[in-house]
Length: 162
Image (cartoon, rainbow, N blue to C red; front, side):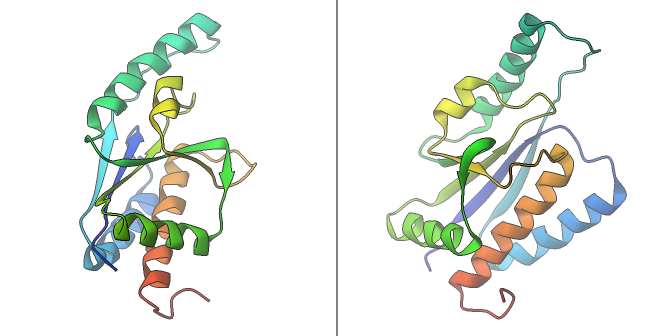
């Protein structure tokens, strides 16, 4: 497979040590398949309850920071619970398709606790849902990294995926 560089843009910082350890482990494993990078975007602080207008303003501010971090010509996956559900094999096939098609940069975007600004969703090439369940965005980052790693091992024909 041609090299596919992966960037994960995530709103907020990881606070839990066990999540940080898992993220570091998968980040280390993925380096053998191409460049891998996590970009943390500042999460807006707020107190609930929020009006619809306040939610919109917070999402807009976070969205501006996300959009500024996306490099031109990147293929963007927005994690969105209303998005498409794919299997690990389908994600692996998409990675192969992108690499063969000359796309070298795949970007996955994870929003904050309020979700993603509509402009970020509109910028995405794919809206991807991992489940109808709602996950904490910090935990979702670990789940995403595991699936990216799994997809790389599928493409490489390795035994990790069973």
